[in-house]
Length: 343
Image: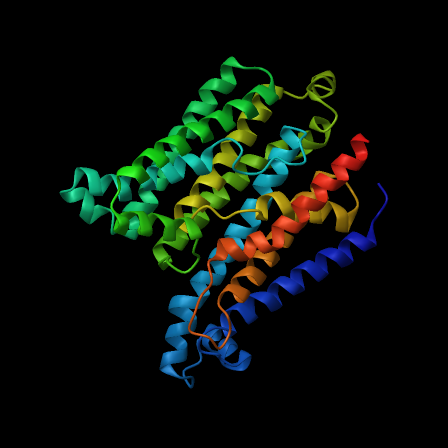
């Protein structure tokens, strides 16, 4: 196979850009910390400010790692869904996973104002909010997996996933109608998305699930290229469609579910990053696109979080608003391009 030095160079650019953005993300914020002091804190030097050490090691470092996991995870999910459904507008949340997580959180937060009692206390806990989101995402995943056994057509699974999403949205609307203003506001803040609420223990759990999903994908990477040409072609060259599809759905659901549970429903990264990667690398080889999309998604998430922190300001913008500012123009461009193709 022909060696492609340009890909190597682009991977190196993505990687070094990610390292630079990672350090800048830790350095910039309401309190600007010089990069030299950030490096000293990360290296465990003892001659640095105790306050800066605390900010770097206990707040900004777990937040930056979360940004890496969220950005790369969403980008991988988006690429897998676009390949599986052969639809450029498919994203990580098309199966209703995000909606399931949102419903879990809505039941906990807004349901507490209806039920009252201990639910009201649980609704104030970040741990229980993450747990509720995980359970909601898992239940939708379970339903999708059952449906995928009955329905052979991937487009039908896509439509059923969208129906699950509509159903959960309708239940959330009903809960919102009867919820108190305080609980509704809390749910809305969760929906804005946030990377800075995770403890080190939660980051470890997040990382373990991320790696588990990654291991599930290893056997199917070779099959992804053939799926682009259709299931019939994939079957003709000996690909086990059922196993491949189940592994892709399970890994995507795990990733999307844990991301929504810990960071909220982050928009557009999963949709936009894979397309940006294809444009930059100009190839459909998944052995190249998959890691590249993960790197680019992580870079976009780090940039979005750095901008959201509004360096030198005490305010922090909703991360979802920033990712949408990145993603919306790309989606519009894709729609216009698709229209031109039809015409």
